[in-house]
Image (cartoon, rainbow, N blue to C red):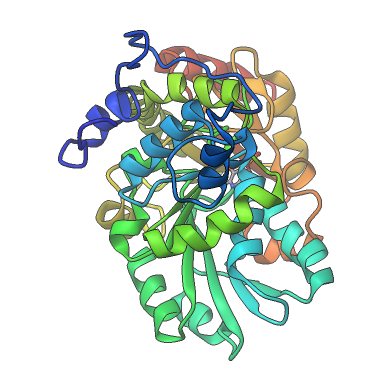
Length: 396
Ligand SMILES: *Cc1c(COP(=O)(O)O)cnc(C)c1O
């Protein structure tokens, strides 16, 4: 096992967590243990492993050394119990809901969560008797009012997608705990470099590793980080049976991407600050939402709760959806694609793309106007991105 990294900063942790030298070969980079199953030395050893009486691997859906390194690494940064890797961010959410909720119970979620996180609750989990309601959790009174006698989970995404609005995690934890509910935070947008919800009172953190943690737009992957060993045991029991497991090669790529998490997040954030100010000053831009701007409604909360405002910006071009479409069709350096948190700048239109499956009135109520454009700023040179925005805005 690796030495204890908890005393180090998150950049050091990102570089070193799960990165111990391989005992068998001395390999510095982690070996990819690409196997489905593991041989037992004897019948007795196999039985002991199944009974949980002996350490050792059995079958990759239940655990694998390469995946375990990643589970340890993300958990180190988040300050939680060992993580549980999943094949996608959605796999992480479904694992949390399946393991911690029962039919007849109720979840309160942030209204502007990642589109599919809401759709799976409202359309699919509802078929199994799970109730959910989604409210503006930035408004703590609205959150409090949405709690029902059968509420067992509060699910907060902050900053939220795609409105970049913020929820006060410590206050949400207090409200959830007062009612005996668990607080789950989707920390995908901030990454543990900028925000560590478990330290603020959350019970479980989830990630789409597809985004910042892997950071290279080449895999889909997820992670559940329980805050305690007790919660981990409850989630793990379901995790191996649900089948939303990770592949060792996927884990290896995420580990490789994660080594540079700190510098990628910082570079993208520096660029985003410059671009947000540029957009806010541009006459063809109606409004800009970026937690680093004093005009952001929760700017003060961002400064208190986060170690930086991140690199996601939403804005609207004057002229609504037609003008926005024109802009999106005119970008040259930026790529018109969904997803976020990669080294390259991606720009998209939530109401026709990531959030299209939501009802129109739910979208508007969640602050996702028809003309809203979301951009995930990458690690290019800021002046090149500004030049691209300038030429694309000229076409509008
Ligand atoms: C992308 C995303 C997810 C879903 O993750 P996948 O890896 O695409 O399954 C969940 N939450 C947020 C905030 C996301 O951005």
